[in-house]
Image (cartoon, rainbow, N blue to C red; front, side):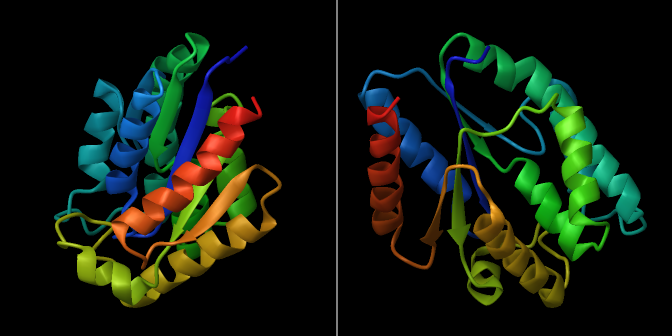
Length: 206
C-alpha cells in the first residue's frame, strides 16, 4: 500500500511543467518532505533509453502504435522501479507527465483511442494512478513560442498540438480524480502560487 503522495503535472509542450516541478519540490522540501522529481518518458535507466528513441527528431517513420507501446513500456519500468518504491517509503513523487499525456498525445491527437490508450497504461503500471494531477493549460501557439524544436514531439504540426491542448482540457473536465487546471500563460510566480495553495490544502487534509 502506497503511503506517499503521487503528483502528476500534465500539459502540452512549453507549458512549464519542468519549471513548476522544481518550484513545487523546493516548497515541499522546505516543509520537511522527501520529494522525488521524475519525468516521462524516462526516470529510470531503461526508460531513459526508450525516451531517446521516442524523442529522436531523426526518426520520421515510427508507426503511431509503436510510439504508444514504447511510451507504455517506459512507463511500466518507471512505475515499477522508481515511482512505487518512492511512494512505499512515504515520499512525495512529482512526475513531469504520466498516463494523461499518452491519452492526450496518442489516444486523442494520434487518433488511437483514448480508452484504449488509458487501458494500456493502467495495465502497464498495475493501476498506479496519481493522487493529484496538475493540468497546466497553455494555448498551442503560446506553448510553441517556448519550444526549442529539438525533439520529435515538439516538431509535430501545429494542428497536432492544438488537438493535444484540447485533449488535456477534455481529460481534466471529465476526471473524477483530484486535480486542478491552471492558466499557464500567467507568470511563473502566479502559477506556482496557485499550485502551492492547492497542494497545501490537500496536505492539510491528509
